[in-house]
Image (cartoon, rainbow, N blue to C red):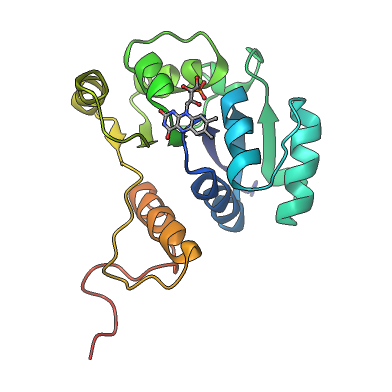
Length: 207
Ligand SMILES: Cc1cc2nc3c(=O)[nH]c(=O)nc-3n(C[C@H](O)[C@H](O)[C@H](O)COP(=O)(O)O)c2cc1C
C-alpha cells in the first residue's frame, strides 16, 4: 500500500520570533511531515537578525541551506517563492489542509484578514480558509493596536486560531530554548502532532 504523505504549509513572515519558526520547522520534519515552506522578504531580514541564518532569496538555495543546517531529508521540504503560483499551496485542489504562519507579522495578519492574496503566503492562507482547513497564526507585536485586534477578531470568527507568541513560565524555563519550545509545543498540540517538548498542563511530574 502506498504510504500516505503528511503535508503541511509553514510560512515565516517578518515579525520577531524567527527561532519559533525554525524550531517548528525542525519538529514538523522530525514528525515526518512534508513541509511546504514560504518565507517573506521581511522574514529573511528577521532571520538574519535573530538567528544568524542568512536565507538566500532563491527558493532552491534556501532549501539547500536549511537542509544542511537542520541536517534533514531534502524529501521532507519544499521552499517556494512569493510568486510561485504553480505551487500546490496556491490551489484548493492540492493544498495541505493545515497551515501555520509563525511568526506572523501585523502586516501579514492584515492582508490575510482581508483576503488580499497578493503573494503566495497570503494566497495559501486564503486557500486554507476557503477550504475550511486549519489555519494558525502565531502573531507577534506589542502593544496591539485596535486594528490588529480587529483583524484577529475577524479571523477568529472564521475559525482561524490566533496564538500570540507569548510563552508561559509555569514550566520554569532555564533558557531561551525552553521558551521557544513552550510556544512550539503549544502549536504542535493544536495541530494534533505528538510532542515531548513540554508536558501538558496537569501531566507533569510535580512533587
Ligand atoms: C528585525 C525586525 C523585527 C520586526 N518585528 C516585527 C514584529 O514583531 N511584528 C510585526 O508586526 N512587524 C515586525 N517587523 C516589521 C515587519 O517585518 C514589516 O512590517 C514587514 O513589512 C512585514 O512583511 P511580511 O508580513 O510580508 O513579512 C519587524 C521587522 C524587522 C526587520
